[in-house]
Image 1: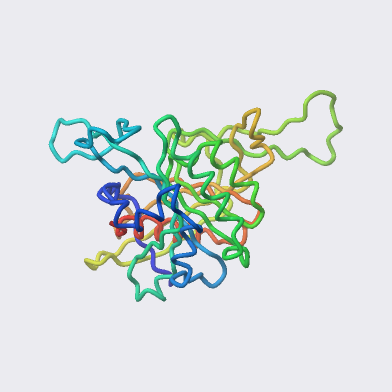
Image 2 (image 1 turned 45 degrees about the vertical axis):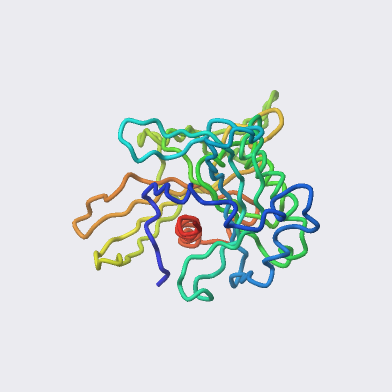
Length: 309
C-alpha cells in the first residue's frame, strides 16, 4: 500500500526558505555562473522507477533593511503577529527542485535544487519558472524517461500550463482553487451529421463550487492510511477524464484535455476532515500515472518543499 501523506494544511513556514543556504552565491548570480545549477547536484539525483519527479515554487527573501538593494518590491511573507498584513519588502525567487524517491533517502523528504533565479519585480514567478524549466527539459540528464512536474495553484494558470504541455514527455500536476470552472470535452456522436460553422469544443460546465454541475467520476479509489499519531483515515480520490479549461489566443487549451482529481479525507465515522482538494493532471502521457500516483506525487511535493529550509 503506498504511503499517502495528507497534503492539505497550508503550511507556509517553508516560504522563509533562505536562498543563500540553497546554493553558493556564484551559482545564483547571472554573471559568474559557468554551467547550469543542476550539474552541481547531478550526483544526488535519484530518479523514481518510472518517472522523474520535480517541484516548482516561488519563495520570498525579505530584505527590509537593505537600503541600497536594487529592484526591491513588496512580497508576500507570513506574519505571526495577529492583525498584521502578510507582506514584507525584498525579492522573490523561483526555485525548481528534483524530488528523489524517499526509499532512497530513508523516507526523509528531500528536495534537490536544480535552478534558483530571482523574479524581477515587474515579472511573475510563473513566467520566470517557464524560462527555467525550458532549460531543464532540454538537458540530457532528464530526457531518459517521463518527467512529472508538481506545483501549487499559482501555477494552474494558462500561461504556465500552456507552455508545459508543449513537452511531450512531461506530465504537470497542479492544485487548483475550489472556485474554478472547467468543461467536459465535447464528443460528437459519430452518427450525427456534421453542421456548418465553428466546431464545438466544450461540453457541459463543471463548476467546482457547485456539485449540481458534477457528473459521475470516471474512476474512484479509496485508500486507507494511518497518521503518525495512529489515526485511521481514508483518502477518496475521484477522477474525471477528458476535461477542458478555456483557452486564449496564445494558448489553445481545447487541444489539451486533462484529468481532474478531487481528494477527500474522511475518518472512521465517514466525516470529512478537510475541505476537498482539487488537482489537475495534464500532458499527453498523463494516463501512465494512476490516480493514486498523482496524489502521491503532490503529497511528496508538499512534504519535500516544507522541509527544504
